[in-house]
Image 1 (tube, rainbow, N blue to C red):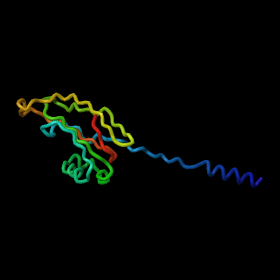
Image 2: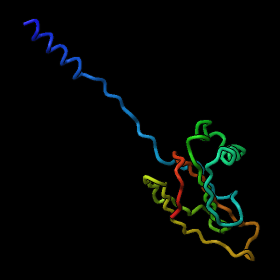
Image 3: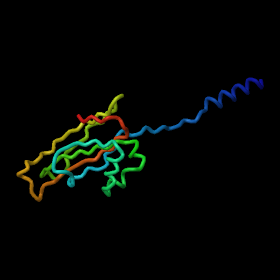
Image 4: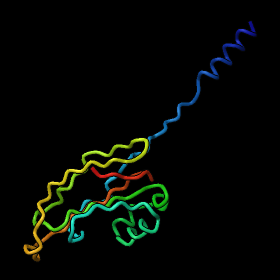
Length: 141
């Protein structure tokens, strides 16, 4: 009888293991969507090296959002839509997919850009900054 109770007790101890909640890391995070303050040309730039990422810390808003560990563990994507008269940023991130070899960022850009001759004081320069929690190469689609 003692052996049986001992066996039941041992089985209960091993079967009642603790459940660890391993929160999966979010693949990406939109840090900033700004309606003005970007560059005067349309471009997408991927920042992966620590020297490049440290340049983002010069911006007061981004300095609050970027943690020291992000410099070594994450990549950043700057999406600049160029000059426009529209009152808000129309660049949308549809989805971000991680494959074995790379990160694929799918964008939808419906921003109406201006010709260089139409730029005046009311022109806006929207941009978006995206943090990708991976150092894999980033492909924009």
